[in-house]
Image 1 (cartoon, helix red, strand yellow):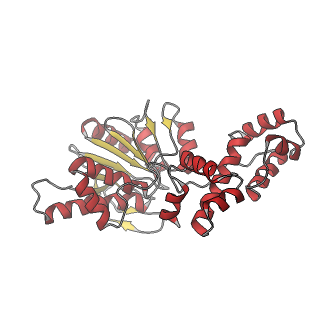
Image 2: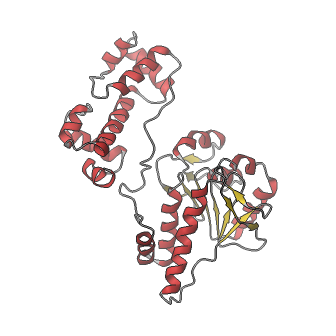
Image 3: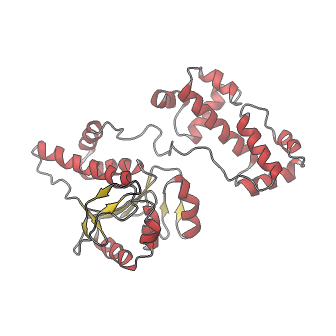
Length: 316
């Protein structure tokens, strides 16, 4: 197993999966298992240290010349520079031709896509870079929501930072079974599978600010008063537009319809209150504009992946 290091790599993208695989190997050895663990190496294009953006230096060796079982490509600030390195791209393509799997974490998906391994596939990356990945690689179907995706028979893509740990645990489970993966998760004090399945809980409610001042003011009003009566008519009057024209302009400028935006802001407001207060779900639902606890529950399950009660037990 080769983990790719390079200047500007995100430390946790690299070290997180490394810890999962090395812990699995240690546990297998302690059990006297007849199964082989993972032979892990960190390799860089020039064989020099992989320096992270925060100054951490990780010892690395040259890229292997022979076959590799698994290639893991972490993300980081240096990924764009690496994409311009023809030798690295050639190495990834050659390694992928015989590797059992190629794994990307966070913006590592850009390098894997640059190598042509994601064409025609569904893939994910850190939520903040999903639109850029989709724009630069139109042949890739980018899904910003999952923690990780099996993009093809041999390629996996994971979302940002700690999502690489989730994917590594899943690969250990594929290789050696649920019992070992669960033991690794317990040892590292992790969930084997996060509550909520694949949803990237870390993604905040964020949308581009509209260029037109009236639409931007409506966005700010919704976010300031998520529990307000935000009907299309009321919002259109605030923007001094007809409802039809307002809906068309808002959707064009913000990237989603006003009703969907309101629902998303309300869900985020409720999420934060579930984390930070002891108020009941009924009280939070009313305060955030859902009207009833059941309406809030349905929205929460659809957008976050778990019920409000489950979310609170996990994240309060």
